[in-house]
Image (cartoon, rainbow, N blue to C red):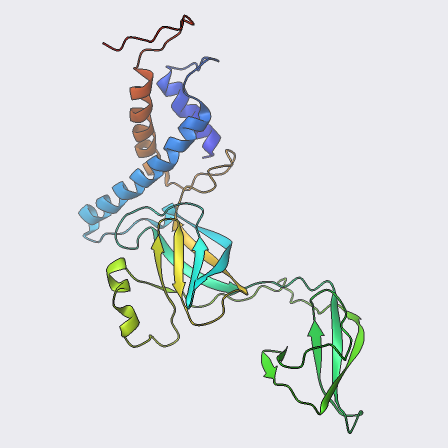
Length: 283
């Protein structure tokens, strides 16, 4: 069901079929309550599963994956990812299911190849170096301190010289340079955050915790060249009324009931329809 369809359904139920043009309850107001209703429905599903199956969890249909989230440095060994919305507060980590990292797809439309030779033997080529910074660099100013080719780092060596080759565009994979995701990061609670730094590091694992709409990833690696994919409980893009709501059909009535309760309180209040400057009496 699209957001616009659910909004229209709720408005028609609140106003008894026909929504007047001068209705005080607007579609955007209903849309705000829908996000709150989805959180309420997810919590209801959490408690229903505990009662029926004895295991507390949220159904997979409530989750959605947001991709391409920027990773920015917050402080030493700490990186921050801003989420589209604050996760629901069900369980200690039920609001967020998975946090994974993925190497950014570099725009390789203006690249130059440089051939690295030995000064004493110009016929011996060590390797090709590809620079995608956008502008060609001369051999005399090209830095040799950290030349990275195929994830191998070559330290400065005075016996090497660099000559520029032709402009090139490195070939992408058939999947469009779909870089693989890392292993899922391990969530920790705020209580665990107070002592995890003094514990032995988990091999090949990255820890994270969330505060509000931010996820903090604990890593000594440089994550500027990565983007994050986060799977969390959400109704989808709340700014697009044509988007499909991420709610199981059997829990849509729970969302409607919650939203209607909030709107009926507003609708039952007296409206000041007279433009006489006098305040409306409430008692």
